[in-house]
Length: 204
Image (cartoon, one colour):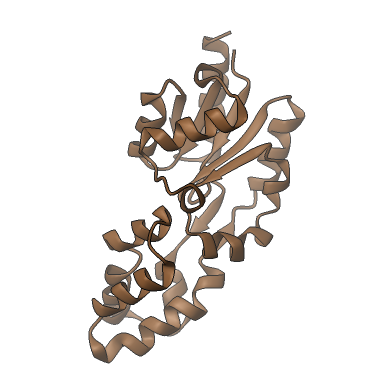
């Protein structure tokens, strides 16, 4: 029996579009691509999500990978772009509220840097419907490491086989499935809801 629905945040409940953000700051073309490649699209961004190294240290390391002529624009993107990197999807709040009203436990499991989450969470009213959350940088674990899924299960006393996890990335879904959680890769709100109902019926 399915009792709990676990949601990723980025690209499931919230739009994360750094290219659109950097262009909104007047940075376009190759300059924008160079800055994004050195920051959000680099392996170093995962270290922000992991939260082991100080954020300012990781941001400085990313800056070193930007050509000197673009570092001022990189700084603008990091500072001015930060508050607007995440925008909640229109359906997100009603989705989580609806799951709570149906009697499901609702949980959040997301890769997210601490300072970014602290800045963005006031714009995530869906969080009020979550029974609990595990955010990567706070626990120093990163999806798809099986330990982060176990961290959520253990923290809230959940049984893996009673949970469905929704994430936009196949590797993160596979990580959940590796510990026995039912996984759904997010493609659209409508399709995921259809898959949720299929899983609920299949395990009754």
